[in-house]
Amino acid sequence: KAGVTQTPRYLIKTRGQQVTLSCSPISGHRSVSWYQQTPGQGLQFLFEYFSETQRNKGNFPGRFSGRQFSNSRSEMNVSTLELGDSALYLCASSSISSYNEQFFGPGTRLTVL
Amino acid sequence: KNEVEQSPQNLTAQEGEFITINCSYSVGISALHWLQQHPGGGIVSLFMLSSGKKKHGRLIATINIQEKHSSLHITASHPRDSAVYICAVRHAGGTSYGKLTFGQGTILTVHP
Image (tube, rainbow over all chains, first blue to last red; front, side):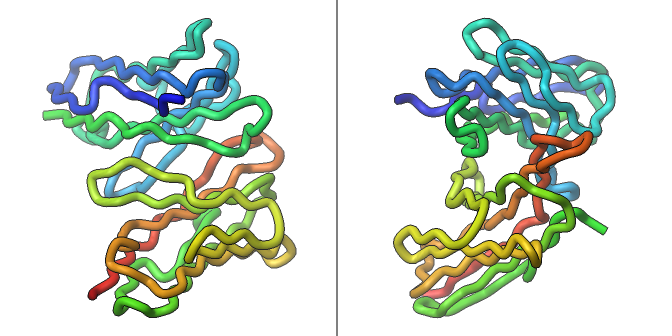
């Protein structure tokens, strides 16, 4: 089985722009979670989607949003980018039968200039 | 106070040494994860625990639910074990049900 894939792997944007990141889970996995990793704050939970519904949300401003499609692929969007949004964005997928076990993608490194 | 605390934050060892990384948490959990992250690399899940002890090769993870504490042990450490080790807990209830909260990570460097 192919692992979790994320595109793009690297992205450079300027302040005020918006960005969309994509995550394709492992085949058969219906849960996708998104995380932000920064040197100062470490790893933080953004949101979780299951069967196209947002099941959980972390403490991030409304500029951060996401969605999941019927094929379980997920996207996250950040609008009005700020310098502090520079981070590694990771997604992870899990199956219904083994919900607690998460498989992480390689991440998207976003740099905001 | 953070909900998940790891210690130590940095750890340097000589090849062959026995290593222990600790994780304490203050919330009710359904599972605890130990993750490994190499520089510039993605995250690999090493263990998922809800009770007791698990072993995989030279790695051993234990959890004490009553004391809200987990340890990750590496026996006969090797330079390739150098990485950041992260403890994460999945919340069991309340408004945070299902969320993962992460420790700050332990940077391990093993010298040959």
